Amino acid sequence: MADFDDELDASGLNCPLPILRAKKALGGMDAGKVLHIIATDPGSVKDFEAFATQTGNELLESKEEGGKFHFLIKKS
Amino acid sequence: MGEKKLAIIATKGSLDWAYPPFILASTAAALGYETEIFFTFYGLQLLRKKLTLEVTPLGNPGMPMPMGMDKWFPVLGTTLPGMQAMMTSMMKAKMAKKGVASIEELRDLCQEAEVRLVACQMTVDLFDMNTSEFIDGVEYGGAATFFEFAGDSDICLYI
Image (tube, rainbow over all chains, first blue to last red):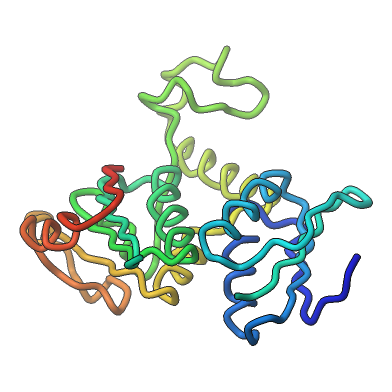
């Protein structure tokens, strides 16, 4: 997994909490910084794609590893 | 591109039906939508500081129940005293176990994200509701107030 600046563990949380927590975390970060999100909700894979498309924050990476979903989002 | 707008009318006052308006409003706000929820009739229950929302299988054959009870347990049995409270606590326990947010949490997130919460003045008066029991930050208005926002909305939902 590439480098990141901040991390958010949303394991165990269900829709829409991972998105809402990610939005909040990104709100406290500077443009260009990267947030690493860990989630267990399978719905979050599609949701983070949709979140990135609609908010303009770039989804750099999305993968499943060790039964968890990992996302890297770059703040726009 | 200007900010998109979402207008929701929340009309139901049960625990299960409290979810759609708050989930959609909080998510829309996170996606950059300007969002308003207009609470009318039983939806006003969702504005109480102390929420006492419940679920009931009555009149709702689609509600899954533990041990497949929705298939074999007599409907009349679900009318017994205490059944609704029991169903509600089972539903809440299941939601907590699955990591589903509480209504209080989603409502707080909506307020943090500046979702406008508007209570229908007519139904507040109709039911003699004590607005001091409502959370802070609620606005009051009527149908025309709703259309002022909804008329320019991109999405409008009646829940």
